[in-house]
Length: 382
Ligand SMILES: Cc1cc2nc3c(=O)[nH]c(=O)nc-3n(C[C@H](O)[C@H](O)[C@H](O)COP(=O)(O)OP(=O)(O)OC[C@H]3O[C@@H](n4cnc5c(N)ncnc54)[C@H](O)[C@@H]3O)c2cc1C
Image 1 (cartoon, rainbow, N blue to C red):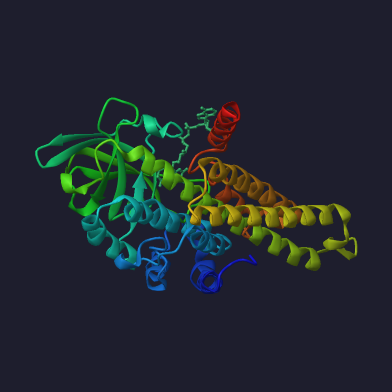
Image 2 (tube, rainbow, N blue to C red):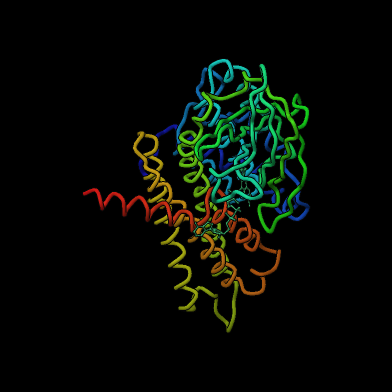
């Protein structure tokens, strides 16, 4: 973008280079084998991006949503699964700790998460509570110097590798009585990964179900006061929605780039595909939609960095970008014909991966509910 700072441009260059060297060559293998590219993840620590939004005092880069989204876009172009795991670690775990935890908790947990020695995850969704996450049932009950936690968390990205889980629990009967804990998975008896989840896409990102059976967690691991976690959750969901849209932008751009190449190479009826008007229409639309996605997303990221973004704007980005990227990926497959449908090209993987972005961090339908509710309420107050 024309308004990126020198620092953001440098980040874009470095992460593009990293993506091409460390992620792209292994993306197909990790997708087909459903394995996690842990070597690349560890190297992200050396690159200094695992705590991209965290305070430099704790080893973070001290950057904002624009910078984090640049990384998502560059990584998303080549391996959305690895990018989703990076997002769960850096946005859902590290950013939450950096924003909401005490200085002691930050000093204890952030350095190893940011160096890549530890892998982070975030547990909010449950088997029976997804869109209605605030209705969650996983319960923490105070007992002496500890809390005893019982319940399950579903769809947790990085579950099988997580050293640290940023965990939302219920601590009271009122709907908003939610409290967060930092779970040191290796030191918590009664904690386990009860199920590995196999998926249509994002297959290089491990997903699992977490189980807490009378898990004893020290009170010092509670984040903030009892019952004040809903506001933390909502604020973090904003940056999560912007950054996950960054993965969709990367996927859309990769599809456009691949199509522009292919329409100049593939010949039918004695002409390259780029000569056919129906193909031209698809290319022109996907390229202009991608440009529109880019401008909308980075503009809202800039607002977030300036402390302005609203729940509505983040939901609008999250509704539109993943939806458009799915359409773009499907058109890219169409342009490639049978080759697009085959695994010779990464397009079918990109389409499978992107579909998750219409579900995770709040579904399209939930984004519509948020946008409509906020706009109609604001209009009624005028
Ligand atoms: C690969 C993957 C990774 C994930 N990673 C994490 C993670 O790391 N941490 C975490 O906590 N969660 C994670 N999630 C969970 C994700 O956030 C939820 O899947 C998502 O919020 C939707 O919840 P659900 O799957 O239970 O669907 P449901 O809530 O059961 O929704 C089913 C359908 O009903 C629709 N619906 C629901 N309510 C309404 C309504 N009021 N009006 C209209 N339609 C409605 C939905 O839009 C959807 O189409 C992940 C999910 C996946 C698939």
